[in-house]
Image 1 (cartoon, rainbow, N blue to C red):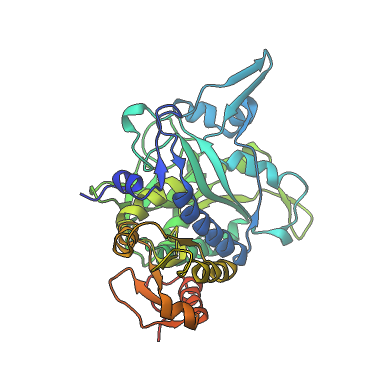
Image 2 (cartoon, rainbow, N blue to C red; image 1 turned 60 degrees about the vertical axis):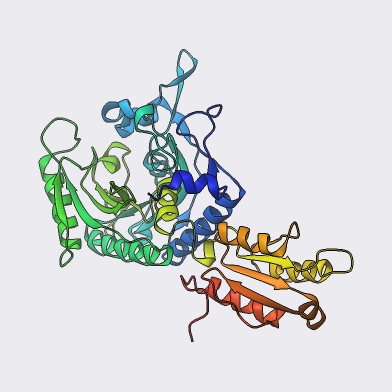
Amino acid sequence: MIDHRRLGRELDLFVSDPLAGAGLPIWLPAGAAARHAIEEYVREVERRAGYQHVYSPPLGKRELFALSGHLGYFADDMFPPMRLSADDEFVLRPALCPHHALVYRARGRSYRELPLRVGELGAMYRAERSGVLGGLSRVRAISLNDAHNFCTLEQVGDEVREILRLIREAHAALGVRPSGFRLSLRGPGAKYVGDDASWARAEELLRAALDGMDHEEAPGEAAFYGPKIDIQIVDAASRESTLSTVQLDFDKPEKFDLSYTDPAGARQRPVLVHRSLVGSMERLFAYLIEVHQGAFPPWYAPVQLLLLPVDAGPAGQAGAVARLARRAVDAGLRVEVDATGSLGARVRDAARRRVPYVGVVGAREAADDAVALRLRDGRSLDPMPADDAVGLIGAVVAARSAELLPAR
């Protein structure tokens, strides 16, 4: 069976070391390179959609999370407070929303600023029990692609629909195939904040945004502060989980006393939309490693081009390959050179690593400033000028295509 933990070890993407602790994976250079490419892409998608990115600390005073409701409704999933003195306790945050509420209230706001979209790829922590931890799919240290959109009640519908469009765009580029949409609603019990009217209004707004889209309703799966749209995925073991989400929240604007000035100069309360386009980097990669079986699309492959000199000796092609590697790196590609062992062994190792492009340079190619490309799917291209090869790969990467050759 395909398992991201096994592939992660084989491809040197990440490691879980008992000395670091369970649920605290370490991203190795190859995994970090792929993750960085995706992070850059997501930030650019958000920037074009009007998001403003911030940095906030991964911990805060105990009072912050008491105010947000996390200590009252989510404490079982949080790490214990860290006491520095009798009146100074800090908590590793289980969510980014309290800090983003502080971003909003850093100064007065006008209706002209809304929707205000605050984005961050930030760290948060969950005190998961050891029995449920596994690879990247369930961890204790989480890097979340998160954002909080502060808007008027009238703007909520358009805001949620635009978020769903961005989710579809990001999923298409990454190769994510959602298994379904779920409207997660309040269930029985006392684990929810807010009044019935606010919940009914929030649920109605999310239902309207899902109009015409196939989805199921899931009572009892809402967040403690509001209903949500969950985009589900299924892993190689047929286990379902939530990747992307959109949540409505009338509670935190009230608790943090957030406001904006309307056209008449009156003070109004914004609505808070929590959203994540691609979820946490950990769960996202657990899924992507399995769905692509380690053969990532070229644009976020850890190594995009592996160059192999036929003769790596002093009289061989090492110099020509080094110059080509420098040009490819300057063009923005992730490049490595492998000059150790037989050519056949190096080609096989490239296939094992799922490198999308292997460039072979022999005596003739070196003399002509050319390279012969072998594609990951087994196809071989005739030798071509080195600059053309770099341009070909660059065009595929720039298009964020899942194919290995540019569209004709």
